Amino acid sequence: MSHKSLLTALNVLLACAALSSTGCIGFQQPTLGLLSFPIPVTPYLQDKKEDEFWIKERYDTVPILGPLSAGGPVVALDPPSDDEVLRALQRARPIEGGLPYLHETQWNNMRMVKEKIADYVDPPRFIPTIGPAQLHHAHYKCTIYFTEITNVGWPIPHQLKNEDAVEVIYIDHNHFHMVGNVDAGVNTNY
Image 1 (cartoon, rainbow, N blue to C red):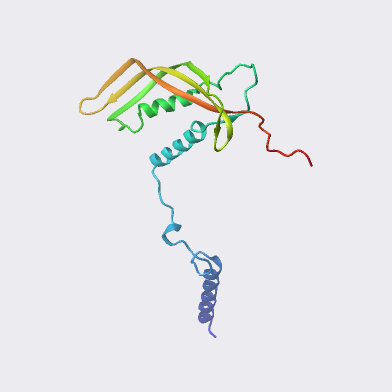
Image 2 (cartoon, rainbow, N blue to C red):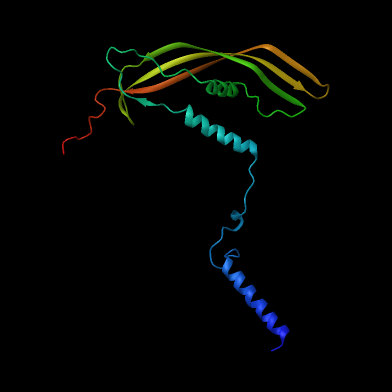
């Protein structure tokens, strides 16, 4: 056998071994077809989904606390955080989007004043998913003072500045308190 044909046979043998051992071609395992390629997602949609998850996880759930102590103070949980107030403001007056160098809005020098306007507890009732409970309401009035700057770049570039911008947001914090013996269903006799 000549040297050239031996070299060709060896190369074909190495190529067959390389193709059959990698698994990338799809001979040994099933493939997803077109779904195996990454699909680009715009940053806008990704950021929107992350914000929806953040709000659902942090602010849209109602916590269930232990029972209220007899004769003790009935005080609500913490007031709304600055992040919660800012997200509520952005839902009421969205500034996201904008067109760079054509129309942009900025909120600067923010100051937030949070006042509790109501704090009360409903009478006990049966809630299907948690049992007997009382709903505790806390209502807050959040006043936001800020400077709003709007940069307009077309047709005539100019800047609009509102140094006395004020927005009022009302935020409700609700949570449940269990009523009665919370551990009534637990069998402690072994």
